[in-house]
Length: 376
Image 1 (cartoon, rainbow, N blue to C red):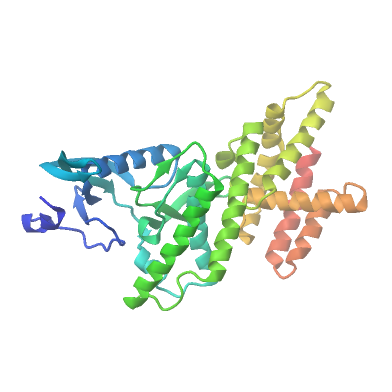
Image 2 (cartoon, rainbow, N blue to C red; image 1 turned 90 degrees about the vertical axis):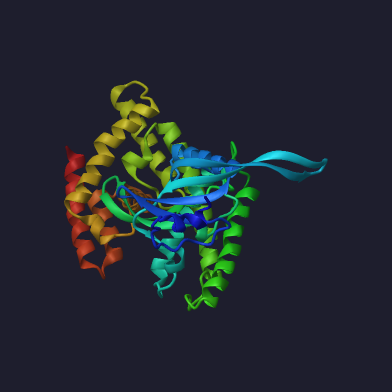
């Protein structure tokens, strides 16, 4: 029977407010697990289930597809360009597992979030867009109603497990897969999101939920700038991994700005030159990258953790802080015409944070530990 009649049959629905949808969606709990059931056509249910499964294989955060169910509605007349055709009609049901710790879209901007918290929400959505687009996935219907923002655990190399905000694709009905997306298609997705934000804002204002703009012009400019930056970072990261054979996500951690992957690659090429000179034979870039990771990067990151330095920089990753300090050392050495050494570089870098004594003290302890490491 239709989802709308399930209540008459004694089904107890979970009282969860869903986003705006063209379809009837209900939530049920069976044997301790919660599920969303979406009523649509049979073909649409099969297509969306397959899209979710494919997205899951690609590593895109989505709802977890459980299965489909079909109800044969018999034959019906369908108008086509060549006249009416008799076709079999099927009602389909798509079943997905309900996400825990999700923030409903109607509540997401209900509170007067600080500018920093709003940016964290935008960052989570941008990461979802970049992940989709870098894998050739065109969303087609991005909106707050078609995604969920969840609190999740993420293992960040050098930092351990952190709680992060993650945007999850929650409607795969319009998803399309391509070998590669053109910039025009990518920007069409982004612009549609902006339009949907305006529609959502109007709905929330009329219902009395929203008291401030949902997405300002400043927010849009920030979104576009960060989206372009993160697409560049993604491309540079792919090139870095291709050349070095280093799994960035599991060994180094995310890059935070364009140019960081290139800078790290330059460090590895310099290490390759050093190893080749030392061994009197050419060392491959893959072997040099592995040696650099094991003898330089990993020990330095371990020292970061030992002195809890990264605690003073909650919005940074270990990789980005390492790069920032090493680039600071490089520029100072270039300016003075000689290698200034690790301790001097860390001391100079720490002066940027003279208003944060904890950061300065930890950076100086870190510098001495790094110098001892490189002397071994």
